[in-house]
Amino acid sequence: METYDPNKIGSRIAWGRSHSVYRYGENEVIKFPRWQSVFGTLLFDRVVHDELICRNYFGDYCLDTRVVQAPDGTHRAEIQPFVAGGHYLSKSDLADPVIKQHFDAFTDRYKEFIDTGHSPLDLIGQGGVLWRCLSNVFVLENKDLKIFDITIMDTKGLGGWGILFGPVFLYARIRQRNTLRWLKS
Ligand SMILES: Nc1ncnc2c1ncn2[C@@H]1O[C@H](COP(=O)(O)OP(=O)(O)O)[C@@H](O)[C@H]1O
Ligand SMILES: [Mg+2]
Figure (cartoon, rainbow, N blue to C red):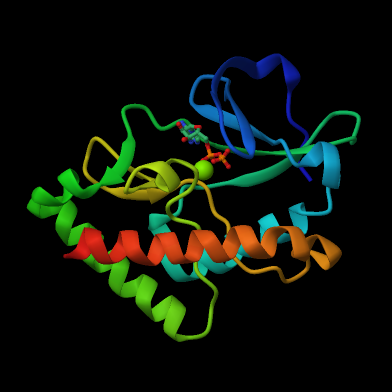
């Protein structure tokens, strides 16, 4: 596994629900999951698994992500390209016919994903709990859509921790279904 270079870590961009995000070198970000202090590297198997499934299904809608480890091997992180000028997808974006077209193509594929038996992806994220937006999906300046925070909302592989995640995922799934319906209406 690639080792990250601590000297390349720059300013903090965000302190999200589950990740602390920093600039990394010129063009990338590094994300440290906050759950790592509790779960250790356990959940990284799920990170890799979820990203592989999503890349197969959603291809270029997924932002490139790679899992890296600390020089002393004690913890892991994810590195992605830095997205400048992106914003969360919300209803007002869909007034733009180009973004709407991307969104419709994405939601068609998303429906197929669900219909083939996958659990929902967390598209709304933390921001989507308070506002009706998809806070894990950026609209880029060129109007492309990118999922930059990939979590499939099922408790597979989480062992006893599933009891903790189960109710959170259930709430998020209901909220997300309503949000997607509203965005498409
Ligand atoms: N690749 C990126 N480029 C630029 N900003 C990012 C990137 N990834 C995340 N961010 C910023 O960090 C925030 C939290 O990131 P996210 O991956 O959604 O973590 P969390 O799991 O905590 O929600 C995002 O809402 C966004 O503002
Ligand atoms: Mg998020």
